[in-house]
Image (cartoon, rainbow, N blue to C red):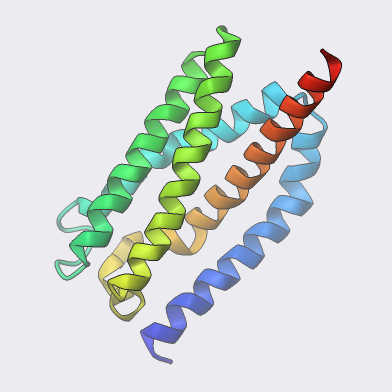
Length: 167
């Protein structure tokens, strides 16, 4: 099977597996908590996004990894991770916490969507082997990140609707 076929198949299966895992094990627990606690857990998951800097670390990824993809992906992950860490540090200042939760989720989701666009434009699937040990990031880690962004943004919107309705 060619890399152009193998990479998207693995990416799609990564999403299927992560959705099943999230729906079966994570979502019921998050739903049983308050919105604040659930958002803190999601922020904790995203606080590890500094790991995306691995895309620009020589020796970890191959030298032929498209630079247009690697640099943007690395710094988008870094920015999202920093925002998530700031949200966790701001838990005692609720308005700031909620603003940072919205920020890291919007920046993070935009980062992933733009990374998919860049990956397609630069032909990343054909050279996916250049990801080397970082191959696991788009196949397993990114689906978890996207799924948790969707859940977090959904709860933020519901929280805003419920807060507006009670005023």
